[in-house]
Length: 197
Image 1: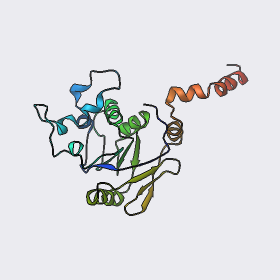
Image 2 (image 1 turned 45 degrees about the vertical axis):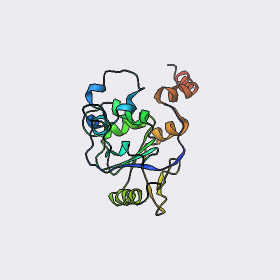
Image 3 (image 1 turned 135 degrees about the horizontal axis):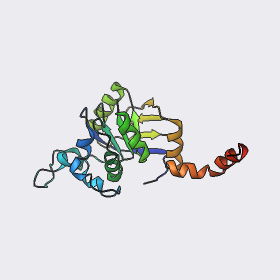
Image 4 (image 1 turned 180 degrees about the vertical axis):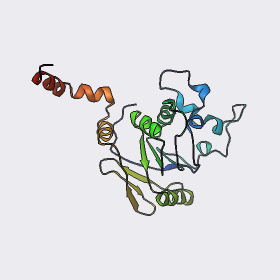
C-alpha cells in the first residue's frame, strides 16, 4: 500500500516480547500466497488463535483495550528468516509504524519497502513508552518522519531516530523503488545522453 508518510499520531499496541522472529510474525504455512493482500488476518497467528481457530483473549491484538497504527515491540524484532511476508502481514493489518530498541536488518528493510516505518529507540525510551501505554491505553505517540522524531505525548519526551535518506524520501512521497526510478526518468536519460550511453 503506497501511502505517503508524514506525521502519524496514534495510540499504540504494546507487545513487550523480545526476539520476536518472522515465523512468529507470520507462520511459514501462510507463505503460499504471492500477493500482499490478506496476510493481516494471520499476523501473529499462533499467538492470536488456538488450534481450533478461536481467539485467545489474553493476546494483545484480541484485546479491545489497545489499538492504533503503531506497534511497540520488545528488543530484536524481526529476527529469523528473511521472509518479506512478515512485513506484508504487519502492513496489511494496518500498522504504519513499529517501534523497538533493535530490528533485524533484513526485516527492517522489508518494512521500509512495504511503507511501514521501523523506529529504533533507546531501551529507556522503550521502557517508558510501555509504562505510559499500560498506565493509559489512550496514550498517543507522534512519529514525525520529516523531523525524524518520536514523541511520547504522555510524558512529552522525544527521541530522534535514524533512517536512510533514500528510504525517507520514498516514504514521504509514497514511492517504491520502481516509482522512484520512473520519477527520475528524465534525469537518467539526460545523464545517459551526456555520456553517449
